[in-house]
Image (cartoon, rainbow over all chains, first blue to last red; front, side):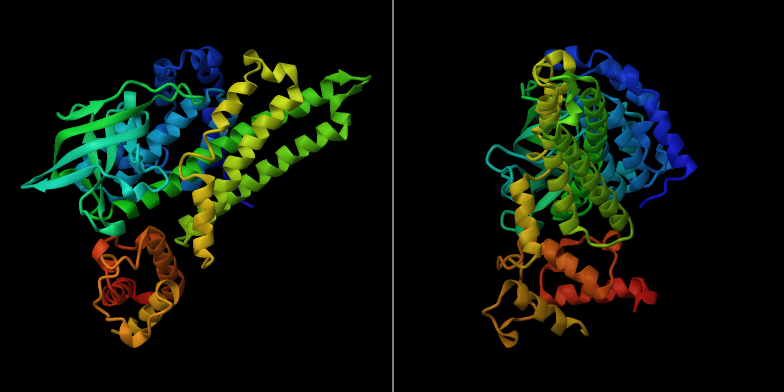
Amino acid sequence: MIRWNADQTALRQGIGRWCEALSAGDIERDAEGVFPQDQWKLIQESGILGLPFDERWGGLGQSLLTTMYVLEELGRGCRDGGLNFSVATHMVSSGVPLQRFGSQELKQRYLPGICSGETIGAHAITETESGSDALAMRTTATREHDDFVLRGSKSFVSNGPVAGLFVVYARTHPDGGPFGITAFAVERDTPGLVIGEPVAKMGLRTSPLSELHFDDCRIPASAVIGRVGSGFLVLDHVMKWEILCSFIINTGQMRYRLDRCVEYAKERIQFGKPIGSYQSVSNKIVDMRIGLDTARKWLYDTAARLMDGENVTTDIAVSKLLASESNLASALAAVQIFGGSGYLTEYGLEKDLRDAVAGPIYSGTSEIQRNRIASMLGL
Amino acid sequence: MKHTDAVKQFIIDEFLPDVSVTELDSEYDLVHGGVIDSLGLLKTMAWLEDRFDLRADELDLDPNSFRSVDAISRFIEDAHRRRPESD
């Protein structure tokens, strides 16, 4: 069990103070499906975006575990699930690979803006024909003298419509297998980069999503993050952070939902008794608690082991599976426990459920996580 | 290279069960030959970390380090040279 120190607790309480303002109007914003610019400014002011980045770039120099601890509180306190998702996406998509693999020049150019939130980050991996099979991507980056030229399209780019910086994964070698992919830092106003309109979706509606098109988009060779051909390894590192940071936010949301369901089950009287006294209801709540505790333990334990330099390939997959599926089960149970009220938009629970459906899909589907675990078992 | 045999045995056990040790050339391109795909690479990295006590966050992510049995062996030696206390 992790014992959080006073500094970590203070950082967590610090973000807690912003959550009421961050949540205000969340249901209306969800209906509109627009990125909350005003709330993003509050996120910038809160300092949360710089948590895991070096102080010399304007970050707070905190560990992965501390970052997660604060993000978990954001998930518990901020009801705008799309905004929370955009925060995690911003942090892990661009800042994390730049800090770990970026050249000094790239760090200097981009990390201050990432830490402050002035530059919103996004990454472009998925394509229409390559989702789970990400390495089958067709977008190419062709070396031409001192430049690379990007050609192709990307889909499902979270933060795409509002991002100032994209980390783009493209094929630099036609038959290089896992070493045929390279990561690039691409600025929004780069000629040849066309950003699609926001795409409507089921949940996480305040986190905008779009396609990207690269029409002879020329970028300098200095935009390579890491080495040419190391894109898959960069992506693997990013995915570990994405899973740990995104899904710890989900555990905060699960905690919020659990507390709300317990309270409701004590107050709501049917057939002369609180509905929580019926096992059919209390058992659902107990399962919500078990799902929450299990997901938290796996996520924090995996993060601690990653920080210790251990290989967590299997653990990351288990954590992602457990957290995303537990979050979905918890969201569905909350709607059911609240009955007809849970189905109403004004209660905010149906929105949580729509948001949670995305979890077992993004960052590697549950099916892919099971494949990965099977592979690590030698199957 | 002192780790060539161990690396070769790992590659055969995991990815080429029908190939004998003598049949696998140490310079054979494992990536171009389709032996190591993305999951295979993750598995290889996991094995390197566990077997040779390498820290995942200290690994130099040069694609060429994983291309052949000899390349992987050189990679292990280089990693240990940079961290002599782990030998």
